[in-house]
Image (cartoon, rainbow, N blue to C red; front, side):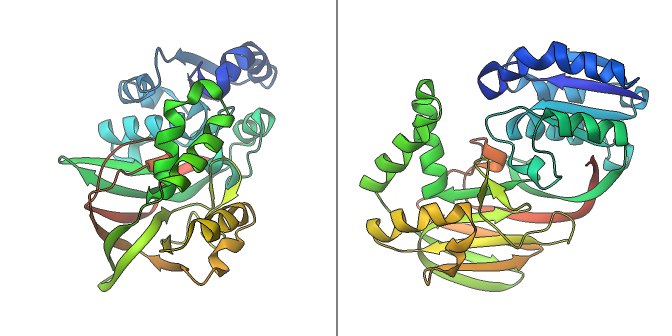
Length: 295
């Protein structure tokens, strides 16, 4: 078996860079032939993937977090038809490995085992279009409070994990709502809300279970809509996301859909697979069992 190993050396606070030598030794031990590609910066993974000679590989593996997988996936789908792309793998060593958890990949050892086992699984991919360019994601995309927290946290990323706590408190103090018009498979829902998440998989931000009923191969996305709520209610609800019980809050609704169009006033930033990319309005679609992943 021969794989292309696309490495984001900055993932997980440079955890990826520190583990690379060990992971290469383990791949060799299992007789996995590999060619390693080191990204020079975060988005470089996209260019590397788009320029691969994919017919030379039995699998294409990203080593990093959700963002690394996002760029590899988008690089491949920008250059090749889905049916041409070999199975994708993930060695999860990023700060956020949310999608990998739905593939039962919790650490780099699981990632290596999935490569050795080599039993790919067809999974759904979601997309939306911005400036005539299609953007694909496998985890989730969202807007509103959760996305605004991520934007704030990025400004304080030198505080590492504490940056998200800063983001939560800053955005809670400056809590604002947006008016939304959401069309789900022909049905229109409107009103003020706090955040909206379009989920292909269950987790976000590591192990927060945003969409507890989501399945990555059922042909549907799970849409979580959090309506207007007080600061106190919001702070009480956020910890419940870790267990997925936030959906029981009376201001939170969930829907399943194959296609959804959202408009907001004002326009809101989108966050596909943890990457700040795109703004509303947007139409999100599910592509059923589009890509194979090792699990």
